[in-house]
Image (cartoon, rainbow, N blue to C red):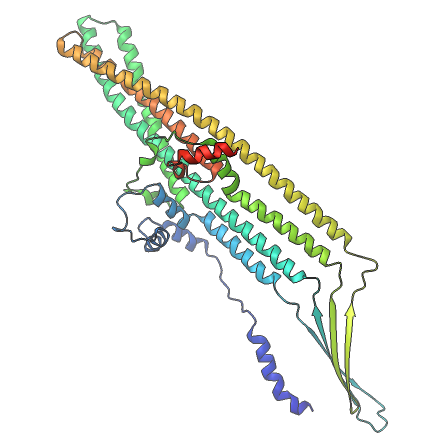
Length: 468
């Protein structure tokens, strides 16, 4: 009998082993990964294909002459390691769906027995049994549903990671813009103060001004030189932070023309109730919370289903000293001492926890939205005030220049008016940066770029007000 069945065992074993996964060793080399990081650039062919795939159009020429926030965001999605970690977590969650859908494997048992006193019969008894588990009460479906909900929650968390990457990139790009603009204005102010100091020195020699006036101008020049030095330092740091937000080494941005067009103006026509509703319905963490609650629901259904016993079918065959014996056994666990009440209670508590966490998240979103909108409104008021001051001093400079042409004002008066205008431009720049920072806070509350609301129709606003 063994000689007849031996040829069948080898194909059966090969069939079972064919579906097994094999291990491939992939060690990490820190030096190699560091070299790969240093080799990253905005000229990469892989980055070009990634951007064209997302834009659904050809980017010509490559690399583009100017990088704006949208293009830089795609580059950050390609290079930033936080996105790689988020994608890996999502792939792991997808693998857990496969695990949840797996069917329990049957078990086989082979027991040969030898009879020392066969009484004239064959001395061997060969027993072969199978144990085939059958899940009941829809457990497999509940496991799959829970895994799918959790996977979608991880997908929403990946979207949150993408938004956080974009938010950090915008924040660092804004800091770079503010520092570079400030350094430019301070350089102009320094040049102007050097002229003013020279004029005061000439007038002091002629006895037309006091030394106090010269000292005041010299101190102002020294303060400007120091402020310009600090602005250069902040510009270099902001550029390094920007490269870090992109997932690039610092030198990768050298010679790159970056557009700051989106930071020069601030949109004021925003509709608060509509934006709050969009935050409550569109944020990725809101959707993640809903999926986590749905997963808790499926977990509770699974624990309730476990109150019902699984079946185990046990067909068997025995060759008992020449006799063929067939059997069919049915095994199940009797829910007498334990009806899975503890896990059911834990699952109910986890569902309640998921519900409370979602409501807490929703409350926090509303608070963040209200705070961000209040800050946005105040920053717009400050920006308008700075703009009015700038316009007034521009008119004053023109008036002083006209008086200078007529001989009613000196060149020193013109320089002082120009200095006041530069100070007003610095104040307006500070107000603009503050307003753009409030825009970033409002976008974070929405988890959505604010320029998507630029063309919000007034009709929709009115309809929304009627529904509230």
